[in-house]
Length: 305
Image 1 (cartoon, one colour):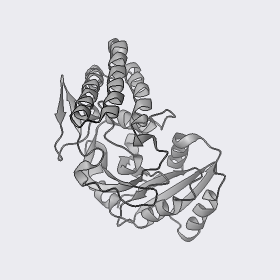
Image 2: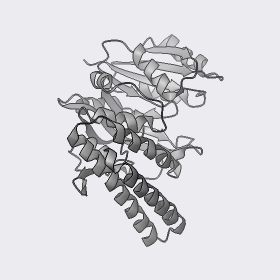
Image 3: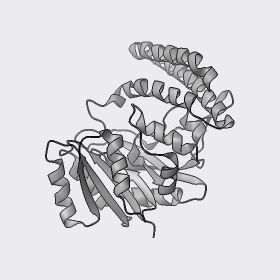
Image 4: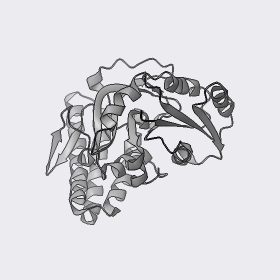
């Protein structure tokens, strides 16, 4: 039976960490090992994690000086057993759905894929799910850059590089199960504003992600979350586009990256159209500004792809 390694980076996470750990313990797939990385916490995070490790020998706790979320995840991967075939990174305020590992493993174990991802269910700070249907989940609608147009992917199709270059249809690390060998080939987590999108793209240069149209993680939307109003995307995208434009990609992937950037501008323009139709004037102004910035950015780096 495959062994799945789960890594939880935790910085001052005492409020929600117990729920995250217990969501791993409650998995219907039981062959897992968990590494909790106390990332320089000043509250009771380390003590809480050690209490769980005392009664469950599948849990390991590592304490280190704060190295940011990417540094903590890299520490966690290095501490996983060598025989762990797959990795999953769970944020300390999120929770896995009970069947997450069981659902993701068959899709991630297929030949030719580098892992698999499901969908995130939004919950508030109290753990109450948002009143949304599955088809409204972030990433349920996936789009692919195909020449000069955007093509909608069907549920049976994988998520590949051509879909991730338009926008990050994978919202949070906890929804992704990654083959250990693919992670080693792609390289470690890097400290940047968009470290998860960066990793998905680097992984996708080696193969596609299997897609599981089911909820696999509950993602906590907090009042200070950048993703609540699009600020995360606004900060992340410039770094991603610079990375892609300077990356030594094969010619075919360089062309896809260029088309993905161009099509992302078009997608933002459709956001403006939708806002205007719905009379969301403030949102229309904000998205017009984002579309203009993205277009100017494309004009500035298109020749580098």
